[in-house]
Amino acid sequence: MVRISVVRMRPVAAIALICGASYIPTPTLRADSPVDGERAMQYLRQLCRFGPRPTGSPSMHRQRKWLVAHFEQLGAQVHRQEFQIRHPLTGAPVTVVNLIAVFHPKRADRILLAAHYDTRPFPDQERDPRRRRGVFVGANDGASGVALLCELAHHLPAYGGPYGVDIVLFDAEEFVFGTNRDQYFVGADYFARDYASQVQTVRYRAGILLDMVGDADLQIYQEKYSVQYAPTIVKDLWKIAAELKIREFRARVRHEVRDDHLPLNRIARIPTVDLIDFDYPRPGVRRSYWHTQLDTPDKCSADSLETVGRVVWTWLNRLR
Ligand SMILES: [Zn+2]
Image (tube, rainbow, N blue to C red; front, side):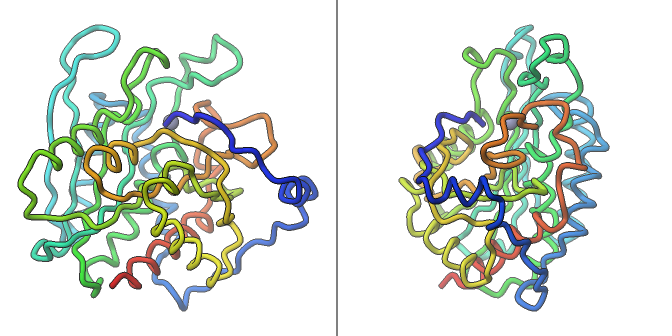
């Protein structure tokens, strides 16, 4: 994703964060949700063991096989949405594959839960230019959202709400070698155009995009475009978080992030929220792990994945 700007923080909030005194870890309350953070964390580690997973790479291929088997084993119908693009550097054809894992296929009204499963080809935010061609495994930026969806999939067959649920994994979110030149959101854009162009027998009522939800030092602020396009979902998610006493969900806007939710909102017209912790590790810290070789599983935690999972699961179960 691309961060556009930080929305200016109010002084009182900034003071609380600088003191650090306001941060109290959320106790694990398993009674309200079956989401297992430890298992989600195991999935995150597993995905990173495939290595860097850029679009079209052998490790992306291995990851995809593993994911298809995972969702099928849990009872989903898995569809591949496949198309070709040109490699931004060489011009060679590259196959892009979105994965769609369908739960409760007979329910016409559906919910979309999404994440991108490609990783950026290189850690381009390294300060040292010599390291900008290093190894990037994208533990938080890539694996975390996918891992949490792998965990949520365990519980979807028993989901008794009125909606079907599709887990959609987007490819080529950032198959980007030149930041100002190459196209972002290639997979999500294709998905959104395909959905918008068809006579819709399936209707997505709402969507949640999970990106960078594994940071061990979790703070999820409301994202500006999400508030603009899907205000009701934002309101509901943060209301649930407040009820569950989840302090990691901060009820104000901080970042404006261009991400896969933009084509979903603008082209497919599916109201979709981006749940993203763009402060990695925390607000005010200059050294970010984002798009660096430091984005590794040890910077993520089972607690954070479980926290986000509880909010999403509770939201799903309250939908009417
Ligand atoms: Zn990224």
